[in-house]
Image (tube, rainbow, N blue to C red; front, top):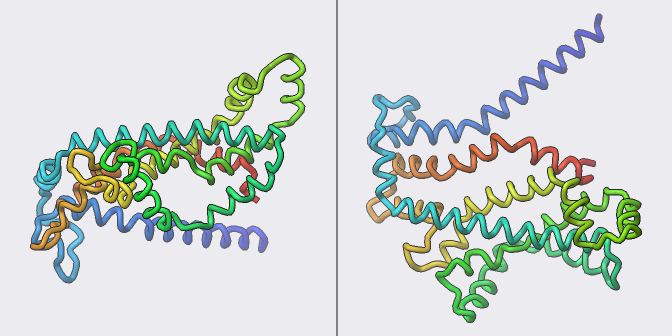
Length: 277
């Protein structure tokens, strides 16, 4: 009986901590939604007013017309699709090479690649900009896509999954006359689908929400992406927080929907790579 009561108490405390943690995480998102429909005078009231006196849907219309929304949206879609496709190609091919092929210096090269994960991405901003400027790619889709067409983390993740597939499959396929590319795309890729899908989803979310690089690599409104549009709501006269929150919600809504419907693939993909412990 005491054991059962102790187990019930531990379960209660566990669920209580999880609920409090979830509420703490969701609090900023709830505040953003409520602020997006508030009148301007109620946004910065002290003490804060959570529930608006009236729902002001006009904030969304103002946010929509404040920037060329459809142009920014199409740019974001093009850049996100191109980056995701490029990364999947480089990740699948590199992961197969490190997991199955034998070549001189393979382990050393893989360790060097993994070591680059310790380098902060901000350090690469200036070298990337200088390189692309010399190529004449600034303010083009190539500048927005090229630096992010490969990911060491994705290669490491997928390589772990490929390495978990028994090598006997590869040897049997080779004995039957199956080439490397055919084995890769008919055996390894289908068996690693959850991991590949999770890599693609993480890249989609990251590319869609990217702000710093599109701001640096473009200098005309025609090439901007949706996150860069957030800067237009901050002026010398101040920040229009209600329309800013409305625009922010319009930006994150597509990725939120994608994540909610595909989160099981992310969890399954990561759990099958051997990173869970």
